Length: 464
Image (cartoon, rainbow, N blue to C red; front, side, top):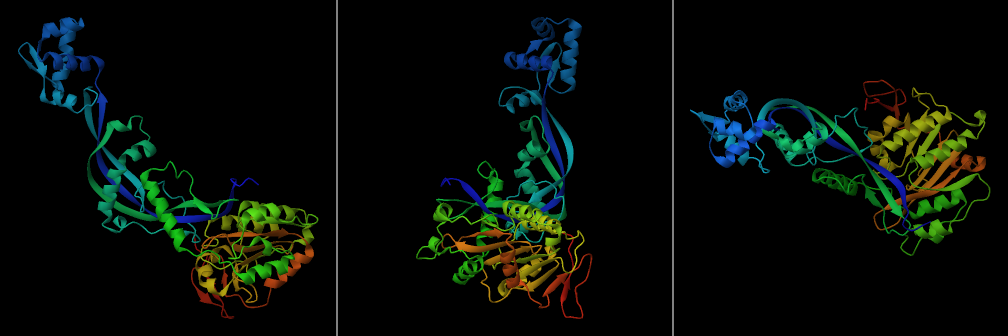
């Protein structure tokens, strides 16, 4: 593979806070004068003063035509007529002074009542959120200014981003002709959040992955501020940590050695792995690179499930997650679970035994708070397995076995295998299957937390 080829290894979803405001503003809009009126003003600006007859003679107008033009300009306070002499009014002279291109333009004032959504990081306008953002996303802290008086915050944001508003939201043909005259009223309204997705990319020759945002290089200043906030949120989060024991577990369970791809500092050499990794005999398993919930991995599992007979697939999904609060912080996790649920024959309405999440002890609280809505129940992960190991068993027929490895001092990436070999799937399934009571269960459409007779906490399924 070319060393410059970028590969997607994970996606990160960010929940950027925003708020809606009702803004009442007076807007000035300058418009061109009729051609004849404009050139009459231009001529008088050059000459200073003309008689009615000389003005009409210059344009070739009759007396009555000249009088109609002059009467209109006088009524608009643009001309001063003293007996038979004409000159520009003070207002008409100001039209020329206000125009950089020396074109006199009339200014109209109109009232706008706008409902706008403003994100609270870079203070730019965003589309109205269509639905509540999922919990399993990273929250981005609002700016200091957004924590101040909401009316002043919105007034300032509206003024600073007005040009972007009339261009991108209002889509006016000539946005430069529109300006704010005043903002007499601002009323804060609902809170919300808008979702942005970052893509964790790596090339074979890179020493570390990079977090990319679509359109970031051409983004305006406000969005760059949002990107900085999302990057800071990402930097404060904990990735799945690579462990020597997890590598040992991976080799034991897969029957494949990956030790040769680590250096003396236990850093994984991705370029060497891409070049020298062995191909498996037969077609029962294949290497995968990237998070388990990404489309390539999910599609691979689904294709292998389709090749099975219906009686070989059980309506069940079991997912052993690794440690680290960054795992699964993306909308791709929910999409992957829904796809796999359908592939193994689970109903749309969740059941107690539908999808199970197994969680390392150190990450149990994070999973319960942020990811529980996606699964029917949660269990503690077996303590015998390393916490950077990941196992997905779909329908007891196809499995993903993934280990997270360091590629530099801070960043990890997931590599592993997908297999539909019955013996290996059974071996992996046995590693994460036990009869322990779940640590939590999720029931649909419940509005209170309680504990059932077995002492298991039952959580609401939130609307978001």
